[in-house]
Length: 129
Image (cartoon, rainbow, N blue to C red; front, side, top):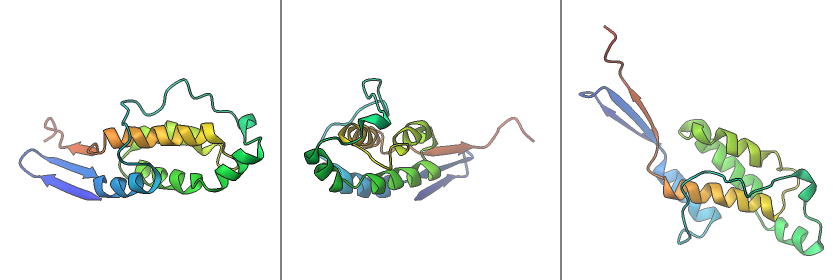
């Protein structure tokens, strides 16, 4: 985590750019697209869509879904609190994710890729004495 303090303007900022670069490199092809919103309505995530075919079950055994969710949760707790709703949504399917669930997690990662320099900024209240 990178912490920057600007005493003159009374700001402290927290960013996890290097950590998030490692997360992106681990879970997605970094040459892929980025998106501007963390999750969209076309993802219809339901527990009943768990892997049904043998091929899909085999594919999902190679997907590090739980590890990706854990990495996203760490970022969410430290500096990306705006992702709490979408991460909570994909976390519900941890027990038996399918391709649609994994696509939703990748979408979140693409969002992070496009907004990787974002962080928390705390500013001194200029009205207080």
